Length: 253
Image 1 (cartoon, helix red, strand yellow):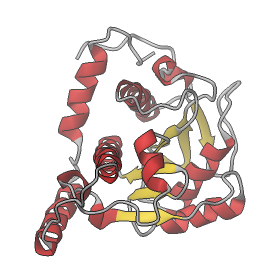
Image 2 (cartoon, helix red, strand yellow):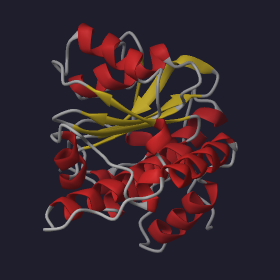
Image 3 (spheres, one colour):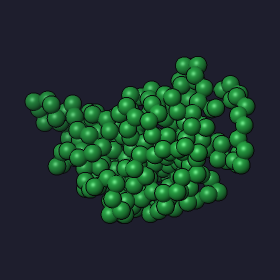
């Protein structure tokens, strides 16, 4: 990839700047995949070496406008360290709740796509009827809808995310958690794909072909091993970086 432009970043570690570049890239990738909801929804990353602090989008920016320097630095108690930074209140509730409950989590993604929101309103939710679904099915949990900006919801979401990293937020959308940005992105990609096919399948006048329960179990074991690899999602991440770099607009500034 081309060398990023030089940016003046006083009082910022190299690790924070790299996290900013990676998160800005994640927003651009999210935009490329068509997962945006204008200025709503949000992704975050925990700052290396500062476990109580994370980066999130400046509320009001479109995802294709986000750059490394435009991201807002805040902590899990709601303190903002970026000058003139604005954040989505519901976004703070979601991301702080996960980071408080999951010390191992370093990236959180949240979407409102039509497919994800569509599955979120279904009582039975996502079924193990596709290969995409089997990639996340053993790690899938459901979170009941609560008041988005309340402390109660913050705490409840933290509890839910202690039981899985691919989350259907009932009557709302989707959420994924990862130890890395590539890992969280890969989970979201597979979860979104599974929801897309689920919605299509429910609109057809035929029951889906079942997958043998033993195959579901075996696939789940393999998927679990893949997700446990520290490099999970990295190949796909690098491919997506090449795609957004090809657009010619640099997010690393």
